[in-house]
Length: 326
Ligand code: PAF
Image: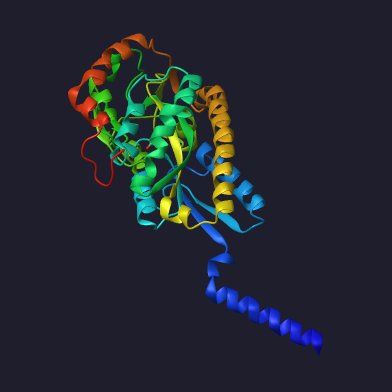
């Protein structure tokens, strides 16, 4: 009888606690959106992070991954974080300049010539200053990961010099720096969300696109693009971002688990990205792509004007933003 009584008291205590503070017992589900295909390095990175988070929280926290733009474009995901309708995303810096203008500086062509140089800046004072400005726009930046060095593919001709870019209709990410860079190279840029790109290439709405090898391979662009030029014209950083509202609602120990796991995922994902660059050129050639290695000097010269373009300088320096300002 005594044990019966004890049992009833414990059950009542649990029910009361659940009514007063449901969050203390509820599982934390973290929906994470990406735009790339499931096998892409972003998603490998998030799966790695999810494993750590699950282990460290004893199953109390769960990251659920939604790849391939199932939940919308990279821009939609960033807006979802601000609205609190999405908890997490891994996105390139492509759309982020529309929210944090200072980030556009990383969208300058040929800014970094090596990964080491990029990591020094991103993981140093400049990168920290930029991430520190995110809470103002309702987002917490957990870590700089990477998309990698971008190369040009197209269905028309081999590219060996800037003149070969003449008139190519090329899809770019939605930012004025990418548009200015492609115009400087003589191409006709068309901003478009990544989710629409494969069909646009297949139906020849555009002739060309530019992305790192890991994206070209995982999205099977070799099926619809014959030529690959190893231009490495942009180093494309990416970020693991969470909704600030969501982050603030976590217990301090849960915040730490998420932050530490994001740093771990950063190192893991960057390694995968480097390995992808080492092995995928041969793989894409095997898939039938004609690969060229243009001399970069004439490309660097052709885009020099992007650095001094007053509109671009103003855009990077700040100005009006839709929802926030760095
Ligand atoms: O081209 C893009 O939009 C981006 O590089 C991608 C593939 C969505 C990865 O961030």
